[in-house]
View 1 (cartoon, rainbow, N blue to C red):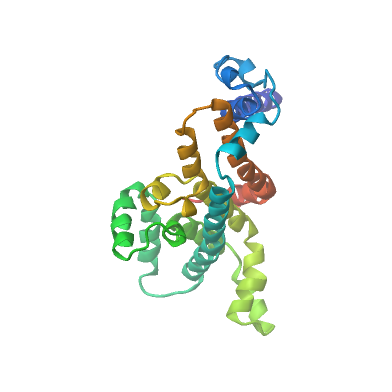
View 2 (view 1 turned 135 degrees about the horizontal axis):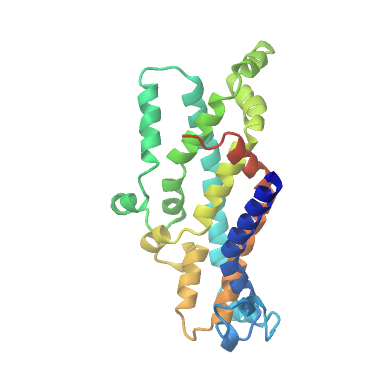
Length: 276
């Protein structure tokens, strides 16, 4: 009976995985198809087979028609800055909430937890007016700064550090380590699952961010990859094979990052990363 239940669960999970991967497989297959056949068999399993196969022709078209390097470099700069600086800021904030005892701490934790449910779209216009007032529009910093401190990741690190034994820090202090060395040498290495979870989720959000760059950027010099794709797919001639090639190139870093951090990400989610 248990074996049947396990097989049924595996079958359901495989079906969900296939359903989730289907759009990605269609995009990858379309990147290697002749433009006229990208949607010729849409809705059938044959849509994920790259026939007629045109090799790298669609990718060469993308290279000829657009400056791919600039939006790609912009996305790397913006996303890397948010991931790295955000990991430092949010982990330190979470660590301080978990370890320091001060008046109003419980209220502050509750406030941070409540901020998680506020969607960014509700804050976009006030932030736009603020950054317009200080003349920060059309820059890297306006695309980075609003996403550094994140209440979800602060709360994630807070719950992670709460379960970490205090004896580890006390032992390091007995050996003569200061607060900075305790955090860098003892706490941060043990928090790798939490860092990996935060890094992957931040990367996925930042790499695919379209709304905010659309309303705060004007020039191609600071335009990230999703906005570059939006401009490319509306520029004549509209060729779906080229668009699928662009989407595939944009997806590769996401897949590489997820595979690289997958083990730590699963550990972080499964052990104690996200709690109620």
